[in-house]
Each structure stands twice: as structure tokens, then as C-alpha cells.
Amino acid sequence: MNQPGNRVSAFDCDILRSAFIKSVIEKKIPEDEWRAEASLLISNFTDSDDIDPELLEWIVRK
Image 1: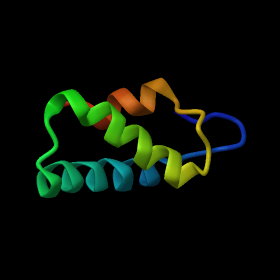
Image 2 (image 1 turned 45 degrees about the vertical axis):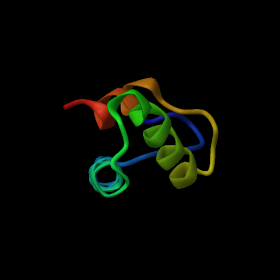
Image 3 (image 1 turned 120 degrees about the vertical axis):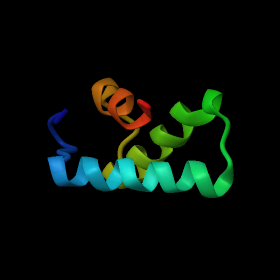
């Protein structure tokens, strides 16, 4: 899940996933918008628009 320049630890992944789940519940985000929400969280966290697709898929999985 790590890419050069924007390393994300396993602990960070858990935090991002928890934040994503909380955001989806609180904002009542429909499932078809989950990837966009997760991408925004990852981008803000890593300060990069280069999103690791494996991390994205792990965060949005049910």
C-alpha cells in the first residue's frame, strides 16, 4: 500500500478507514460516492493526488 513520497503505515490505514466509515455514516453518503469520499480523505492525509488503488479499495470495502 505504500508508494514513494506518500508513505502510509498500517496504523494510518486503519485511521483512514475509521474516518471514512464515520464520514459515510454521518454524511449519509450513498455507496456510489464512497470512492470519491475515500479518495478525498487519502489525498488530504497524504497531501498528494496520487492515490494508491489498493488502499482505496481496502478503505471502501464492506
